Image (cartoon, rainbow, N blue to C red; front, side):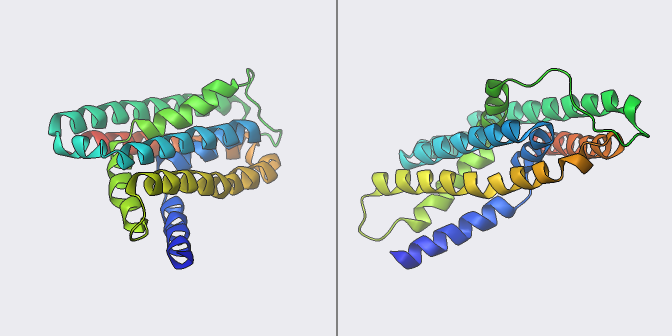
Amino acid sequence: MPTTLIAFLGACTLVAASPGPSTVLIIKQSLHSRRSGFLTVLGNETGVFIWGVVAAFGLTALLTASEVAYDVMRIVGAVVLVGFGIQTLRQARRTKGAEGTDEPVWEGAPKSDWASYRGGLLLNLANPKAAVFALSFLPQFVPRGAPHLPAMVGLAALWAVYEVGYYGLYVWFVGRMKSVLSRAGVRRRLEQVSGGVLLLLGVRMALDG
């Protein structure tokens, strides 16, 4: 059991370290504030847990078996990603006026806690690959002889909690660097990069049949 747990946490680390849309969104929101970044993490991990529970009940198999259902989710996910990308690129344009100064740039209206949480949750739930991955990932670490459903739900919860801590380090680091990252020129370039990445990921998901 301890060996299985260590292997599971090691695999969770590799999964979290792989760059993806959630990582981009968490860093982007952390530029706004630590609170916004952390709530985005909580939203994302709520989605991770939900997909884990869905996989535990075997419902994800229906998604993989139905090409229509998968394609619908894929297009919805692509729209969500493109929407986030366009929103971020617009923020970069608004920052352009302050470029050339070393003064920190702050957005005028603070994002609500719900908006930050919802963004992380929506991005995760709109990704069908996250659902399929949970279905293939979690069963590998169910201890032999253990009840399948409780073990899968427990692993999903552990996965989500572990990633809260992992991505929390991202939020902390961006917060520590905020005095530099919030300068107009730096902020604009980071927003351009993150917006472009989200946009490209959305297009890629739409074209990935």
